[in-house]
Length: 275
Image (cartoon, rainbow, N blue to C red; front, side, top):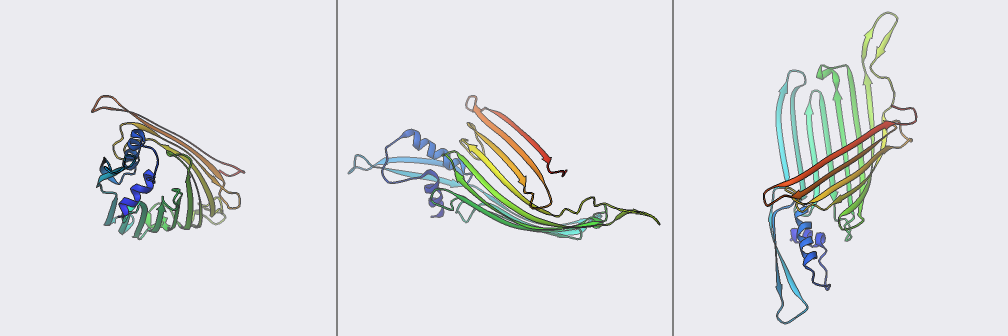
């Protein structure tokens, strides 16, 4: 039942409307673009008692959309370590994304949780939120004498601009507690690794994306573009911006050959006298 709801919300099935082979083909592309199904078939049947109505029957085969990992390891530098994580892009068949990780060792302790709902409203507005905490002891890694404790959370919202284009924004607030050790000391001088007392970050992200691919896992036609801006707000310590752009396009060449073009560009710089 949940998969039926995802399909209906994605292709926008509604009562009434005109019959269009083009729109029906586009509906199949939208379902394949989700990445939840390995095979999608559609059958159109007419109703004998109605000349202006049809039935659309979708037959889908689900594919693996997540992973559960668990591990134990040992390193001469960081000692014994345990980690566990779950990543699911179609949580309980709802289309929601759930990511959670847990890692523990002598040098690193980390916990994170992230959840995203792409169907927060009937108009396919999306919402996401996450929390995280991470502690690093550099001395246990045999690199340098420092400790970093970071905690924070994120909140995001997205809206569709067209059938294939979305814009989203989120805010990420974090605090880093940094304790530095001395790298050399004598009777008159002592130097530490820390050159700055910065520890808080408030970062906003605005992202535009366009996707016309015909398949999530194995595209052969269409393109995927994105533009992203990260900007830290001057109300906190860190001040920088980061611009990213990416492009992928696919064109079929015969039945078994696809031409792919892929490119990305990034730029990052500090502002307000910050590196």
